Image 1: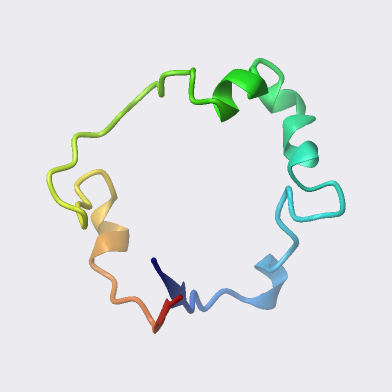
Image 2: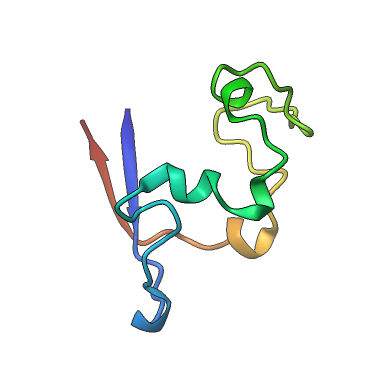
Length: 81
């Protein structure tokens, strides 16, 4: 498995801790009112069907992404573990 580290060029103003990265991790996400209707036990055991499953013909398929993003060249480095 490899990970692509990408430099987004965002000002530091946008670099705030993401939901779920704090002390109570995923619990912070699960407790959000927006996600109240989710049965987390079923979701984690993959018993819930996704509302949309794209048809993918290739590993690098980007059909469902806006060209605003797919026409950009990523900056960064490819890391392998």
